[in-house]
Length: 115
Image (tube, rainbow, N blue to C red):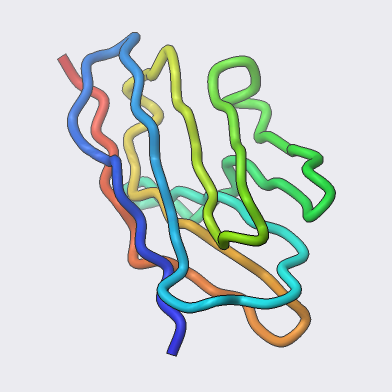
């Protein structure tokens, strides 16, 4: 069974940066889109950023200009560079990869922005 494994979360001060990484444990063929979502305590999971198979990124308004998504479909890896972090970015961040057959999710990595 394929697993998505995230890394790179942690505690950072406001204004700091983190880079999240996600890799699939086995090859996933035909990925249409990869992305990152987040869920803060007491809130619903929300989209942060996605990147299509053609490399086109899409961002939530709240992270535009601060976050950058990149990925490699062939290697089943996706990254999220997060700059100028704010306390409201605190959440569990989930990696996501989608092909025609299935919607894969990681277990999540905690990002805490606090002084």
